[in-house]
Length: 500
Ligand code: GLN
Image (tube, rainbow, N blue to C red):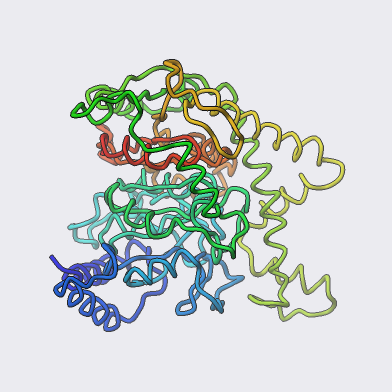
């Protein structure tokens, strides 16, 4: 199986399914993709491949800047926007020989959980669709692909590309991965450069990877996880070396040779994730996942993250505050949409924004502006920052490995502290699209589906959603989430491989 055959398969899937799924927005000319795949195949044949990823066709979320196709963020505000530069993460992939298949759909500016807030329409979940006659499908039964990286997840799950980039601010890679039955990985904050990723909430935004297997995810991760002077929050090589020294490798020291893969590894089960909204099948699958880890030699123990219930509130406060600041740049003057109703500076701003932004983005800008006003700052923004710190502390108290950012200490031998955590990724399987859309839907409710993913985002921890079977009632995929200490991506990969 060679890159040119794989590329043909991807192009064929795009041809067949994209009209229905609405995952790819802009695609590269198939002739160019084929040509590049042919060249990669020749390199492989001569054993001169640029990397293990040479010739793989990838999809990039619409909020990654590329000079070739548009970077719309699924917003009318940027409908014609072509970036003057390419995101660092994508530059690394291109150097490794990856082929851009195109840019994929998303919730506008990354705001949403179901990919229903896009200027070019919803993304559908490919599960149960592939191989069927698309004309016979009942629209009322169509499920969400999840959001905000719904296009990335739908494209990978339907084999339109080898893997895709997404962005994860509060769960936007992990939730769609769980809904579509694929792997979704959010590395530690600062691991992969955000240069060229359009900002939503800068202190939370991470580049994420959607792929069909854990090993595929690791391939892309290894290529992209590098220092970058263009992103001041990206870890420097010195910091990376320090982390590696504090977390020597993913094998705990007491692990004897030739033992089971997780011998010596302690996995925590945070009790606060056992929420009332958790569906029966998520609970059953979670238990089965715990058993699988035990069977692989891990010690599993209950742990407590007492401030988990405060995470969603803190996230909404901080995320909207940062968004309101970041989105100020769309003023109709520098780039993007400009209203024709120019009758004064302030009017130009407001007309441009009313016309360019969708309703969810406008709602969040308003909330974010409110929490930053002098009257609410202490009560909302500062309080949310404090909660964020207590959530970081909660994690540091239960992980046995040190957090190089907070300076928490190592306790590798402490039997009450753990190497990784296992939780469900979401409370339920993918919801039907008709249940997500419309005025009867409370926008706050959508955040409940991010409850499991937001804590790792607030603490900046690496977290991966791994597909783990299907729900016995509806047959849709269930995802389990593995979280690790800051900088301990290796442990996340190691545990994820076992349950994959
Ligand atoms: N669903 C969350 C939100 O709407 C997370 C989004 C994300 O991670 N980009 O903000």
